Length: 108
Image (cartoon, rainbow, N blue to C red; front, side, top):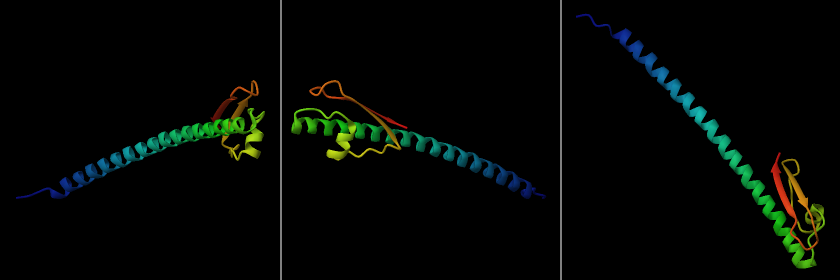
């Protein structure tokens, strides 16, 4: 009896290698996609935390001084708010000294 095992083994090897390449590509694509989603979510959370820190400092200033600060610089210099200006854009709009300022934080 003659058996053609080398051809069968070669086909099986090529098929196994092809499946392995497809699975590796799918895992790589999924990992890159997951990293992008997690990174974006972390950026949104950091922006929300920064906004809350600015609002909290403004409220603390109001409690101490009886008025909201006129600018973001006051919060940075006197109330310890630290802003990464290279990463975030922060707008601080004051309408009156007795109204909570409008604070917006955007990630660059």
